[in-house]
Length: 167
Image 1 (tube, rainbow, N blue to C red):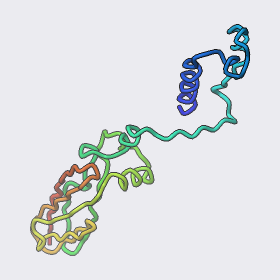
Image 2 (spheres, one colour):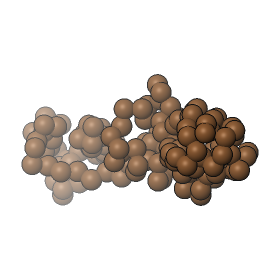
Image 3 (cartoon, one colour):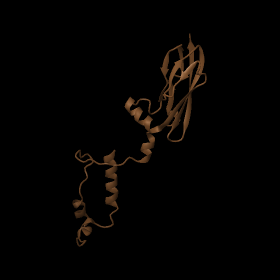
Image 4 (cartoon, rainbow, N blue to C red):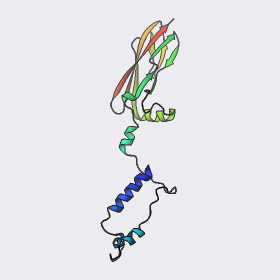
């Protein structure tokens, strides 16, 4: 992809030159264009020895950032015994472009896109949730754990995990 961009840029520059290269190089201008074409350096798009550095365009970077529709939490529902714990995790929504990423790729995009995650229990006497999302079953009953994800874009989204605690 980078080589194609460089080839396109080179073609643009070559086409936008106002006069034959022989004139620019100090010739008298009597050479015809056929000689100029022979003097042009051939650009081989498949040359493996050529390495080009092109900065990514901003829209490419934005394409690799999360939006609320790309996210969900796991699990959405959990039944557990008193004294047990589990971890709520922020994951890619099924069917999103981020669904099949490796753990390392997901972590990189997640770190770039998510400013903060806040967990809150509606009944902490039944199910307590820590700042990191670890839920502890305290006593029989039910609670809803609300997970609010604040994105670097300024958007936020809240998910609910229903927790049922048995004796």
